Image (tube, rainbow, N blue to C red; front, side, top):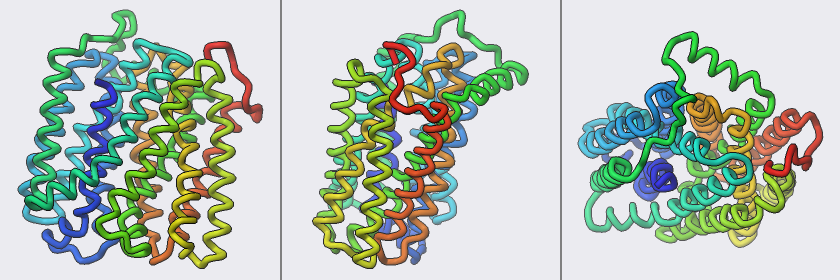
Length: 393
């Protein structure tokens, strides 16, 4: 259920990638780089609203705020199907993101309510696996819908997906918040919860590390259509190429769920973080040798090698950031989610907007962000990597 809820977010982004140009043209936009704002506006709303859902979920429980968020998502999707202008599209997409924020914050809080340590990392890996499988299917779903209709039906499909999740949560999700963890919704209590999160070194710097790692994903999503179609001329094979990276990341997350209990979150994620940084550095050097237009087989092979390692970073960093903060899981999840989506979206949008007809801006962005994330990891661990803090972590 939690994977299905979080998958709504990936679906709201990836299902329209094949139709971004058609949506923009229908609404009077001619610049390909501006089409990306349909994604960015949604992600900004999604990121900003998470700051509110955390304290609300800590006060009123997990279920009711989640249902409200799903209703907002549903309404936003329906309105997107009828907007007459690009400006209104961006506004309504932002509002749809406001509703989607509940699914991210509360899903992570529910998992933390029920699990901790390596057990949480294992569950988050399985959730991440489903989350990564959505990009495999979503572009193909979007393209198929537009073969039988136009882009408006894509948003109808999103509305139906939200409605299905609403029914599932209504009838199958119990309240998971522990009564002793209820936090009053007062300015003093909210500030105290935020201070608890932001003054914890491990939580803060793993959150920052997660932010820059997630920025790589948003940079890829923003650039994917132009790189695959304009540079490599894949045309209708674009969803297949896009799906291949999703398959690699999903497989990596599945492997992580199987081995994290024995090896530990820190050993896995720290090794993958170093590998991700080095691989992107090598990839950038090769890209520069080819002047931003290396052969597709080489580009794709290096892409897969780099992003296989992401599946050992994302879920473990999330669990490490949340581990010390079980008593304020809602607030912790909201701050982690805000940073790893709103800030990540802006950083990723910078990669997408820097597109210049070559692959160099995207690959350079991956390397720089990976290096920054590695630096935050070192700060979180006081320079000592690969050291489990206890047998459960």
